[in-house]
Image (cartoon, rainbow, N blue to C red; front, side, top):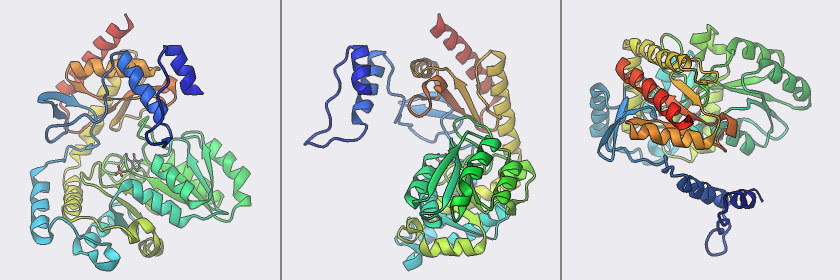
Length: 417
Ligand code: PMP
């Protein structure tokens, strides 16, 4: 119905459903959005192919751009020291471990990485898996059951939601970063459920804001909840040493039961992990389907993250530089009167345009001026919260940050004329 309404408003015919009698969920909306963007002259900003190594700059179709679409917060992708460690691992172990670790895929670097990550989070033990998304899905699905309660931030990542749904537990969202709202949900629902899990992120990727960890930890204690914090965007980013939200907030790491993280962002690889109590980690390694029935981390991937952890330990200036760059861009945007939402200035800077069309047009206009930044549009966010989202890196230069702000000011002004 919504598609028909939108189509009638735009005068376009509603798209036909999929082929051979299949009706693919959401296909009409997807096709309609593509047509609408094309009618407005907005090129598809997704699936752009990068020619080589992307970082603070990138090359797309032979042209160089200042890049704000990489999660490589610390500028480590392609670091020669990491490449050397990866090459050693490749020569020694090859490209794959070819099987689940439980069967025949276990290699020394798996435990080495798990011990390093456990130490990083001040946890007893850790398990690494081949995807960050799958780590959340399989962990929540395995740990929670029907009759249990999962209380999560309304902006929790899709992987956390999918895991919560798969678990069969009762799932309740609370207003973003709102401790009082979380308390209200726990007050209403906790008693009726056997076990409860409070789910947060250490740093939210849409808005770049962070939770009041101490208050949430106290809440979890008060209502006898386990807690899981997703550190995908805070490992290597928050805290002077990059140990995440606990270090940043001065909260003891063992106040949180499970630390989840990804290897794909500051740790420049691919995979996910859960760090926490040794008995829970052993349980996950024996039972979580996404671990038991999936291949172990490949040698190059594990070597890259191990090397990245060593470099972050030795070069904490990267974390400070990321902060400086982020605050600089944030201030320049704020001085220009832009809406930057609730960003705390740790690598994620949104520029809220308040309309998907404006976000799409602005992204395209600045792309033509040599800046690669993605629009986040409805339905990923509510229409009034449509935005461009800048992922800042420690390796952006001051000049790149200032050029970017100047181009944005100019192009946004041109669009509103
Ligand atoms: N958690 C959060 C908060 C994320 O933002 C992401 C991905 N961006 C993931 C989990 C999944 O991680 P990965 O992309 O490494 O699979």
